[in-house]
Length: 127
Image (tube, rainbow, N blue to C red):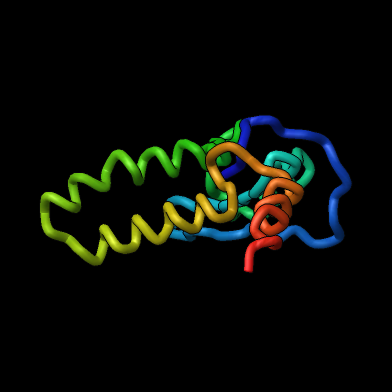
């Protein structure tokens, strides 16, 4: 998961641990996530994750990249379904995730730290 589908080359760390994993007998899924427009998936890191798959499992040559915007849009599209079903817990969790993404500029327009600091300056003169 990333803000864009660009994979860059970079320095390989001495350890290679994915951010998440789903491990079953017949399938393994490793999750690597990057947050922010200046944070990219690294080819070397993804290759390192590929080496973690069990020997007998077939490894897909190209990674499946899902952008944060696609995840946010998916949850927004499905919110009404759970609202109609009166599933208040799922609606609450979807809203919490959406607010988390908005606050942290995930899956949408990224703002610089200066943008946030300017908001404080604007209100600092009021008593």
